[in-house]
Image 1 (tube, rainbow, N blue to C red):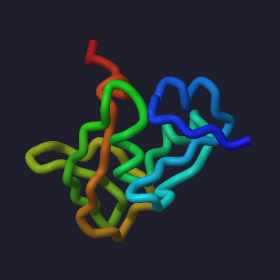
Image 2: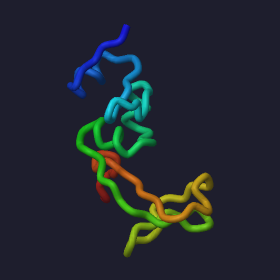
Image 3: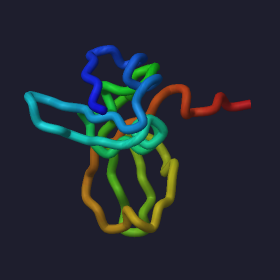
Image 4: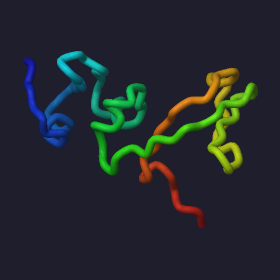
Amino acid sequence: MVYVTHDQVEAMTLGDRIAGLKGGVMQRAANRHTLDHRQENPFVAGLIGSPPVNFLAAAVGSDGAVTLPGAPAFRRDPGTAGLAARRGGNRPSACPPKT
């Protein structure tokens, strides 16, 4: 069954698989957990979830260290090694407060 809605909460509650469309073109389709936790498409990442995603420009070093301008590396991911500057996103709720 296909159910069409513009209500994010309704889609996340009822859908087994959810598709994000932009201009009639499917940008991404996945289950609710994947859409919320593995943002691979900037449009869908900004569309799904609360609070909204903060988009940041980042540099990726040859060792996979990801840095923001004026900040130390915050993550090392061997899969990103050798990539040039990237645009990434993160939800504030995914960043635990410093104690």
